[in-house]
Amino acid sequence: MWRHIASNALTFLIVGLFLLAGVIAWGSREYRTAGPLDAAICLEVPRGGSMKALSSDLVDQGAISSAFIFEVGADYTEKSGDLKFGRFRVPAAASMEEIVDIVTRGGRNTCGAEVIYRVGINQTLVDVRELDPATNEFIEVADFVVGETEPPASYEAIKADGSATFRLVIAEGATSWQIANALGQIDSLVADVTEAPAEGSLAPRDYEFTPGDTVSSILNRMQDTQAAILAEAWENRVDGLPLETPEEALILASIIEKETSVPDERRQVSSVFVNRLNLGMRLQTDPTVIYGITRGEGVLGRGLRQSELRGETPWNTYVITGLPPTPIANPGQAAIEAALDPDTTEYIFFVADGTGGHAFATNLDDHNRNVARWREIEAQRANDG
Image (cartoon, rainbow, N blue to C red; front, side, top):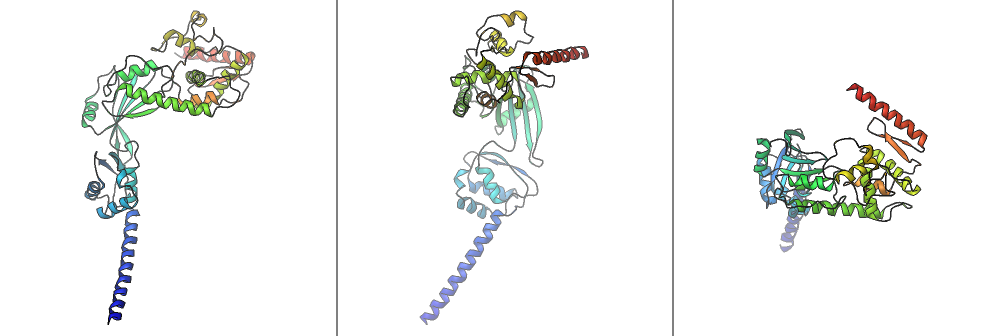
């Protein structure tokens, strides 16, 4: 009798294990298979949210078929504790596994409104846009220039809503004064800076921020980022450069940044200046003359005069030999890397070629011909009005 009972119990145990394995396999398939969403949605995860509350919201929105499987899957993959707050785009037919990844990987919000402050050389443009989850494309809501145009009501409304993402986009080649001055005029930041940071010390790139952040906190982040970029580039520099310190590399990078906006030209332009430094030739670059006049505060807004090209300032590379004493702008990472890893060329001259790029030359005769062509282009443009 006991043997019969034990046999039945073993049978039930085996059947139970098979059933459990089947349930686990089914749950695993459900977790990884395409979900029921017909169209993309914008999913909001509040601060302090939990996977349990999120799973209930996802069921209500028709994004998942089972809150239980969603929570178990998140626990099993050890992602329950990684939930990030924000607004996230969940594409149509997203699986539970994909949704868990979306809300735990972090990074910039992928859905909802976004306010972008584009800090340039001459002005700060504000773009207000909102992502349409169905098309995954941003719809322009409003745009205006800080200090020149009254902020539209849509901008004020999105700011007051409190769910938008705020981002700074800093232009390469802007000076420290231009950046600090522009940040101080942004109404979403607290202006607490009276002096611009050292020239060249700010990394021009994108920075997310929260309204109410101080300008000094943003500038500190920019300085930390630039220091890290420069340190890595200096560590990876090529041999034989006429640069003795990372600061000299930053100075050269700032000149490269101001001389060309064509990415493919940076290393060629760098080679010209490196060749000139190696030959003991003066750099003779207009942006350094301009910096000697403006000190980076504002834009010159006109062509250089002959008297200014001959005028003695610490930055006038038509007068001084070698590098100026400081950077003349804040160079981006690509310009810094170009300064420390230039192309290998024999170029010692370059001039604009009318296409946005430059014509390079290894000797004065070729350079003079390139200059003559550029003068013809300038004259034709003037005639065309």
